[in-house]
Image 1 (cartoon, rainbow, N blue to C red):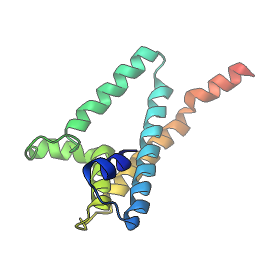
Image 2: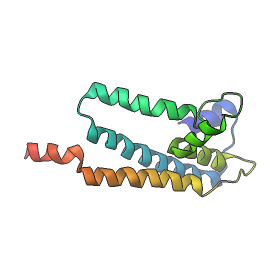
Image 3: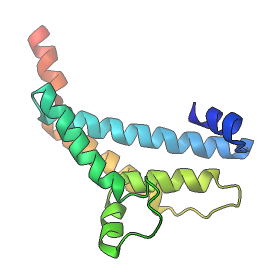
Image 4: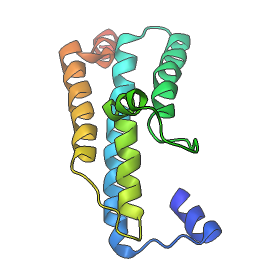
Length: 139
C-alpha cells in the first residue's frame, strides 16, 4: 500500500526488478517482528503489560535505527546501538533495494534480521510458548 502511495502520490519509480527484493525484505521483516512479538506474548501475562513492553522496547531502538530523519549523524555509540537491532537493517535493506541509483547493500543487513528471527524462534521453542498451555487447557 505504501509503495502504491509512493508511486501515485510522490512520483517514485519502482522498477519491476526491484519488486522481488522489496517483497523479500518485507517478508523477512514481518517474520522477524512477528516472532519477536510472539516472544513477548510468551513471557507476558497481562495485556496492559504487553502494550507497554512492546512500545518501550520498540521506540528507543527506532530513534537510533535511522527510522526518523534527524538532520545529522548520530553519535558513534548510538549508531552502534542501532546496529544491534533488526530495525535499522530492515530499513537499510529496503532503501538499498528501492534506490534507483543502485545503492550497494551489504549481506550484514539480511544476516542480522535472520539472526534475530532465529534467536527469537529458538527461545520460543525452548519456552514452549503459551499456545501449548492454551491447547492443553482446551482439550
